[in-house]
Amino acid sequence: MPMFATAGSKLYIGGVLPDQNSDFAESDFDGETWTEISRLESLGSLGDAASEVTFEDIGQQRTKRIKGTRTAPPMELVAAIDYDDAGQQALIAAEKTNDNYAFKLEFPDAPAGGTPSERYFIAIVGSQTEAYDTANNVMKLNASLWVNSNVVRVDAAEGV
Image 1 (cartoon, rainbow, N blue to C red):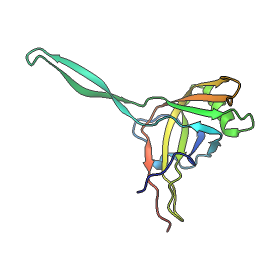
Image 2 (image 1 turned 90 degrees about the horizontal axis):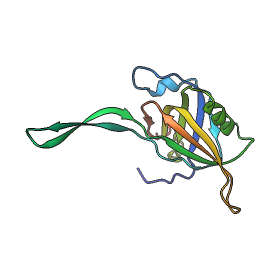
Image 3 (image 1 turned 120 degrees about the horizontal axis):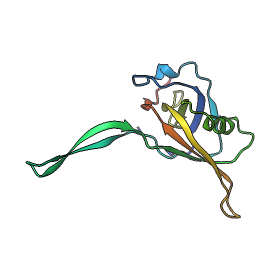
Image 4 (image 1 turned 45 degrees about the vertical axis):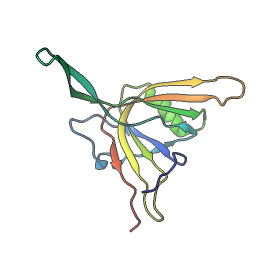
């Protein structure tokens, strides 16, 4: 697959989607009504990491490491403030709750007549702040998504 730029990617917020005891699958996001979060400048990063668990082995005089629980670092969003954007309004409203919301990230990599790559996950909107900076800057909406699930990867597909 060729490389592609982040430009053209889209992020959507869905409704409240509670956590579950097993990993999410693409079908768990069926039926969601998606609202695009517009005016995005930065999507941050999305992924998973294991916590480090250590053991001090006296006999070997060595610290041993194993993987513990999994965690995803916050996905830090930056957007130009747009009071009329329904996606930004949904993001701000979601921050006022303690609920997990469904999110869909769509990449601009669809083959001709095909479908793009997508990422699905749930997250709590942990923060939303406005940044004003200096005179020659666009006022920004910054939001932190606390990812609380695995990230479901859907690859781009050729058209049928």
